[in-house]
Length: 293
Image 1: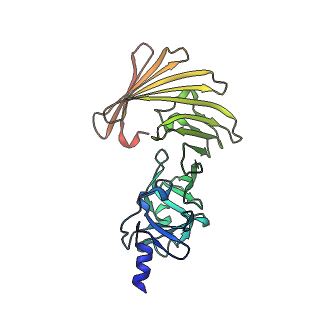
Image 2 (image 1 turned 180 degrees about the vertical axis):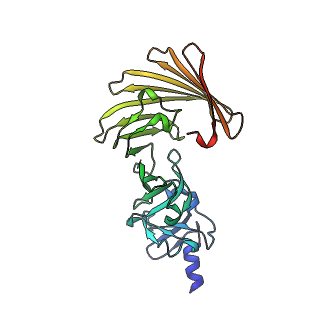
Image 3 (image 1 turned 60 degrees about the vertical axis):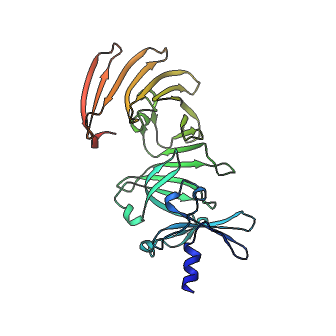
């Protein structure tokens, strides 16, 4: 009997039928928001946490169940997605919908982490970002179509923020303030590249938006008020390691306002230089890696 249970829980993509069900098993390491799109594993180790997807004979999904690893049993019970399964991770990439480095709730305490909530189809609904003090700073809200695909997500903020401080490549200080309850709506293409960001209040009134153009080693960002009035733009050049090397800012008439360069002489240091509209250095500073945002 024990060996039969072992086969049922830890077998993988080799399908086997019950009277009214078909079962597939997926590794948690392959979770890309939609756990069912990961390639089923041929073999799951006994001490490895994984997802168990159960289908009707027609192929329609019945439910997704999380099966904890041996080290996790007693801390996480088996939970079906209909019970609003919540999982804890150290890393989250919304562009690729990847949740990485799974941890337990106990391990999350006192550390920055992400909490992912799955819906009844096994799709990630929300991902909360929690700081070391246990406070939610913002929530990623996923948008899925009927085929389980996504081309946009929202980030809801719970305190005043500045988008340019969170991402200096995409956003500019001139137009990037966020108030409590506001939403930044990211739209991206099939390659996961961001094409635009619209900033809305809690009632989804548009305040401003960004449009992006991508080419080899260059990103062009243009920003507009809600009435489509151009506020300004900037271009970002990246080095061979895909790190920003120069950001040049332009006004609404495409005249250079200022520029910032980034040099990386050592792994632990970054040299930031600021230039005025005439190309003259007005400030240069050296930052240690741990102090760089």
